[in-house]
Length: 58
Picture: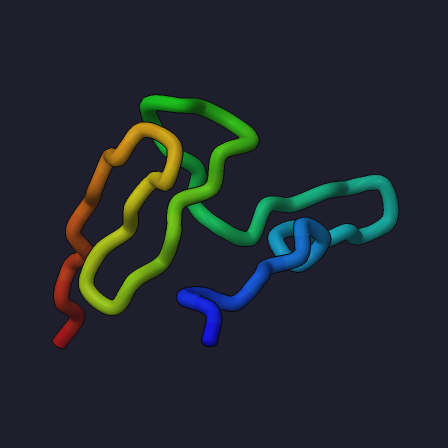
């Protein structure tokens, strides 16, 4: 059984006419083109290892 599901690149973008919008958050260290993984309590970058905790919403 695989560790994770494969994510297709086109699922990370929204296209509206001539406008392209990124759906996910990008890594502040690596820059554009490197998306952060969305975990239950944090966001992490698979390239550089940067982690950012999610804020709790009440």
